[in-house]
Image (cartoon, rainbow, N blue to C red; front, top):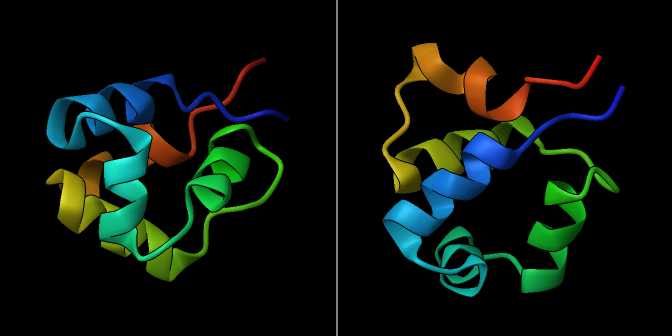
Length: 71
């Protein structure tokens, strides 16, 4: 099932303005972020934790940003 990262994308724009800036803060390439956001590669737990710190996402809200999927 494909995941819906639209809420995550909005949070990235809100907090970091661009995927490039977010990728830099994550210590990843823009390509890596793009692959994750397009469902081509999976997020690692450590990356989710780092992203939550950068984007100020509370741990209770993680499923809303990283595990919401299309039916």
